[in-house]
Length: 269
Ligand SMILES: Nc1ncnc2c1ncn2[C@@H]1O[C@H](COP(=O)(O)OP(=O)(O)OP(=O)(O)O)[C@@H](O)[C@H]1O
Image (cartoon, rainbow, N blue to C red):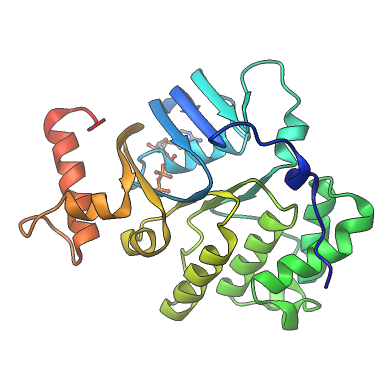
């Protein structure tokens, strides 16, 4: 099937990174849940790790332009989101799977993904092909005309990923995409992620350190709204030792970096 070339792919790419935050601060309610984060993400798969309440979801929501920064700088695709910027143009190039995503249960998978393509302003003539392509990519072609309410939790999450990629985004934000998946679905998801990543800047938040270690090109670890570590997955693993808690080198590295952060009261960068 012919692939639809979205506006995202023909847009100029004259910067070395898709996401850049400098001293980024984002409030969640009355709390400064992201409290001065510096990071840069280019193309590839970036794992976002951190304990409960670290600020991962708040950071992703800011990257998705759902939340406006309270301070510091945030540039997406070379444009500052705090200035006078055409948000719609940026949003057309973003795919976002929220942690708890909603859908009309009576929609079929195809209708759900089509609806999101329409919201993302995919050109009308390209919607049918873009939808089919996204549904095939997540392995739901045989369920495309079934209603969303008949899908298992793991399948619904895959439909969620299909809606996130239907516009061929240059920035793909997946908040806890493996939550609630069984081990075999998690393996399938890792495969899917590997196939998505080539020219996209993908940010995946997760509690599963092993997901990050096996699929991500690099890892950002946040705690209490601060960046504790950004580096390769191998560097995360190398940060731990036999005395740190965890079942694998990456988990021990994760525990060691968090413990060090708590001991010093500051990040490692
Ligand atoms: N709407 C809100 N009102 C008040 N506080 C909030 C709100 N949303 C988040 N918070 C607080 O902000 C902090 C960061 O929350 P956030 O959801 O970003 O963390 P997280 O790293 O995604 O956590 P988890 O791994 O548990 O999903 C937490 O202390 C949380 O209680």
